Amino acid sequence: MTTVLITGANAGLGKDAARQLALRPEIERVYLGCRTEAKALAAQQELEQATGREVFSFVHVDTSDLSTIEAAIASLEPLDGIILNAGGPGGPDAGTLTDDGVTQAYAANVLGHAALVEGLLAAGKLRGTVVNVSSEAVRGIPAMGMKRPDLPDSSVEDFVSVADGSRFDSFDPMVAYAFNKHVSTLWTSAMARRHPDVRFVSVSPGATSGTNAANELGAFQRFLFTRVFFPLFRLFGRAHGLEQGAERYVDALTEDRYESGRFYASPWPSTSGALVDQAQIWEDLANEAFQDNAYASLRRFLPANLSAA
Image (cartoon, rainbow, N blue to C red; front, side, top):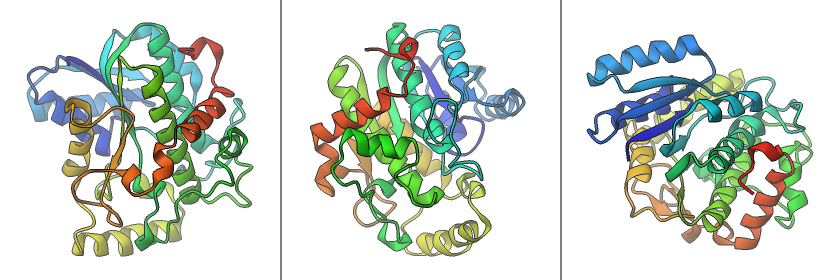
C-alpha cells in the first residue's frame, strides 16, 4: 500500500490517522481530503513537522457537495486505500435537504462517500481497501440511551426514508447519525460482495476524546457528551484517546485479519476495547437482503456519472 486518501483529514481522528500512516515507510502519499484548503494546508504543515515526511497533498473534498467529488476523482492518482472519515452529527442545518433530495447529514456521512468510492471504482482509480468509519451507535449504546436504528422492514423504502429525513418525526442529529451510519455500514458490506477485488471494512473509532464531533451538537447535548458521558466513560474504561481511535482506522486499512464485508467495533455494551465483528451482537448487520436494500436505496440518489454499476 503506497497511496491513501482520508476524508475529513484536517483535524481529529482523520488527521491523526494521516500522521500514523505517514510514519510507515511504505506509504508514499497521503491525500488530505478536506472542505477548506486553508485548514488542510495548516494541517499538512503540522503533519510534516510531526512526521518529518513530505508525503501529504490536499484534495478538495466536501462530502455534502457532489460537485467536489467529481472534481476530486478527476484529479486523484490511483489509490491503494481510502478512509471515509468525514461526517458527524451535523450542525444546525443537518436536517435540511440538499439539491440531491437528502438531508445534509446523510449527504455528508453517506451519499458523498458512496459517490466518491463508486466514482473512483468506475474510473479504475481504487484498489486495496476501503475503510468506512461507522459507530457503535449502529448496534446501540445503552449507557448513552442510544437505541439501535429501528426500521419496520429494512426495505428499500425504509432506507430511502432515512435519506430524505421522512423517517423522523422531529430531526434529532444524534438519532439520525445512528441511522445514517447504519445505512453506510450495510452499503459497505453490499459493496464487498459486488467488488471482491477490493476489501471493504467498516470500523468504529469508539468513544474517542479530542474529536470535534461534539461541537456540532446543540448546547445541551454538547454538555452531556463533554461534561458527563466522556468523563464517566474514561473513568470506567469505555473511552480512549485520539491516537487509539485513529489506530483503529489504520489497523482496518492495513491488516488483512479484518475481513471484507464486516463491521468491527467495541464489544457489547462498551465503546472501547478490542475490535469484534458486530454481527455477533446484532445479526441484522449480516443480513444480505438488508445490505442490498440499503445499497439500492442509496443508488436512487447517486448520479449516474458517479456509479461503478
